[in-house]
Image (cartoon, rainbow, N blue to C red):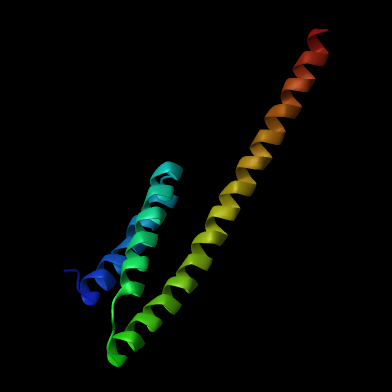
Length: 101
């Protein structure tokens, strides 16, 4: 049987794993981690929790939301940079094609 404290530790461990996936631009790995984290969250929410455990879980989830907002900002910044590169490449291709014709 899964214990709430084990799931909380597992969920806390996801923070570093997600951060590493974002830093290394491992988008498939990030997606897999997010799926796994969601499953752990669903398990945790399905458990009967004492008032003390519930308070700790709520605090952890609030912290998770704050961390997710930071992750989202980093990912959005990387996405914007990639879009600029793609636009620049498309522009360069058009210039080369125009030059060659």
